[in-house]
Length: 77
Image 1: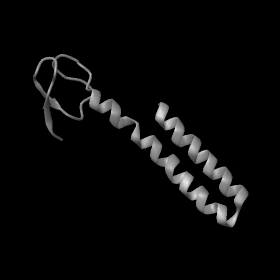
Image 2: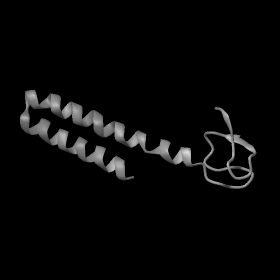
Image 3: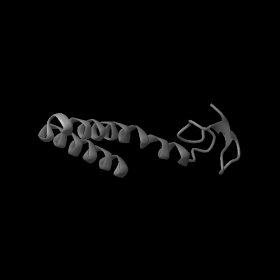
Image 4: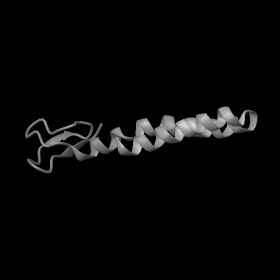
């Protein structure tokens, strides 16, 4: 956990804080970090689905499509 300066009031705050405790200005870096967790599950499902296509093309195709949909939804959340 590192300390950064608030761009509004220039007081120190944690880089993990969602907003400055002194002035309340939102931390833009936190918003960008929240997205990545949701996309990982979709990517893993897509890879598993592609691998399952060798054993069962129907089941593997369904899992791959669901993983791809989850991955795409993660970009828009």
